[in-house]
Each structure stands twice: as structure tokens, then as C-alpha cells.
Image 1 (cartoon, rainbow, N blue to C red):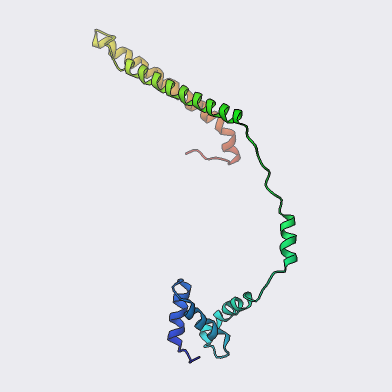
Image 2: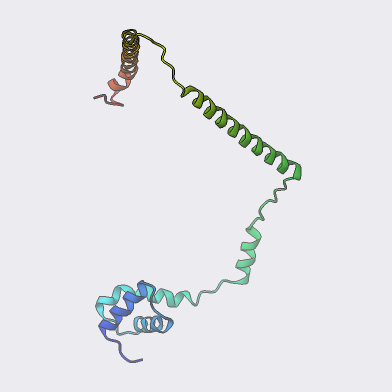
Length: 164
């Protein structure tokens, strides 16, 4: 084999690791790395190509294959009767039909609720009712916040959580 220069080896290595080499180019690389004249900068690749040469000579015995096959257990066969399949299919159909009915009922109820009616004739009375409802909601939220702070306090003291 003719001597390959450093630039050709760099190019072949780059193509090899990008999986772009053909069989002839791979043989050139293996021959180069199995020869005694390797550039010191390519010394790190020597073992890689030496391993690929050695790996080709490894053969497994027939006894190994027999032992391996004896240790492999066949997968259990699961038999499902036609009645069970039909029961599963019927159950699924029932669930789908029930879901469709619930969604349809919800959409109907929402459509009926969308028709709004005025409940107050006097705007001042409506304003008072809204103000009272918002005040009730605010006080309820304040109570909830206080309860949360009280329930989290022991965890804060232990340093498990921090409240800002």
C-alpha cells in the first residue's frame, strides 16, 4: 500500500466519524493504523482501529448459543375470550355515550343560562347589591388568607417554606 500523507488521514478520519466513508476508505484507515508507521498526532485512534480488527476474529461457540436459548423463557400466552372482548367494547361504548350525553347536557344548560334578564329595576339597588356581594367576597378572601398563613406558619418556622 502506498504511503498516505497526514492530510489524507485527517480527511479520512473526519469522513469516517461522520459516516461518509466507503468500504475501501475504511480499509485504508485500518491498514494505516495497523501498520507500524503512525503519525504521533493520530496515536489516540490506534486502539480504536485495532479493536475493530480484533473484534472480527471473536466467535461464539455453539454451546454458548444453546445455553443462552435454554435460559430464555418463552413469553406467557394471554388468552382473551370473545366475551371479554365484547364486554370491554360495550363498556367503552357506554362510557363514550355517557360522556357525549353529559357534554351535550352541559352545552344546553349553558345556552339556557346565557339568556340574561334584569333582576333590578332600580340602578341604585343593583349597585348596593353588587357592593354588598363584593364586600362579602373580600372578607371571605381575607379569612381564607389568614387561615392559610396560620396553617403555613409551622412549616415556615422549620424553614421548609418561605413566604414573601
